[in-house]
Image: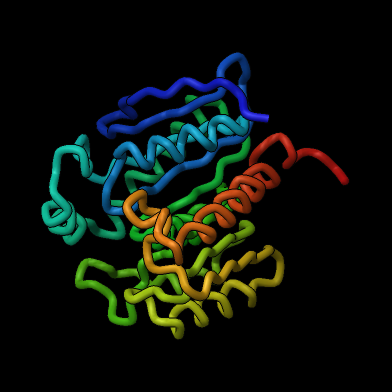
Length: 245
C-alpha cells in the first residue's frame, strides 16, 4: 500500500539534499540515496518519492552542490565527477547520515546508489557500520580505477556488515564480468551478512536511467529489479524489518 508523501529540498549544514517523507507518520527507517552522474534531477527525486511512498524516509545526497542534469550538460557533469575524491565524498555522506539519525530521528538507515553512486554506496557501507543495508545498482567499478579513485570497493566490500543487494547488467560495457564476479565472491565470503545478487544478462550499464529504462533489453530488468529493491528496503529498514515470521 502506497502512502502520501511530501518532498522538499533541504540544507544539511552546507550541503544540499532532497528529502521525501511519508505524511502523517514518523517512520523509523530511512534510505540515503546516492545518484548517478545526473545528480538530484527528476529521476532521482522520483526514486526518492517512490521509496517514501512505502513508508521509508528518503534523503538524497547532492554531489554537485545545487547543480544537476537540469542545468548542466552531461559533459560538464563528467568533468565534475573527475574532481570527486573518495575521502571528500565520504565526509559529505557521513554528515548526511548523522543528520538522518540525529535530526530526523531515524532508527534504521540504509544506502542505495546507482552507477557512480553504486560504487560510493559500497564504500560507505564498508566504512560506516551503522548502515542497515546497502543497495548497489550497476556500480561503476572499471577494471582500471580512475585517477581520483583511491579506494577499492571490491576489496573493501569484505568489511560490510549489513545485508547487500547488487544489481548487475550482463551487457555492462564499463564494468567487466570479472570485476562483478570478484565483487560477488568478496561479498559472499562474509560470514554474517546476506548477499543478494541479481544478474540481468542483456541489460546495459545504467539501465535504470530514464533515457534507457524503456528500451527492450532494459524494460523488464528495470521493472523486476525495482520491485525487488523496494521489498529489500522494506525488510531491512521499513516496518517489516521489525516483524517476525
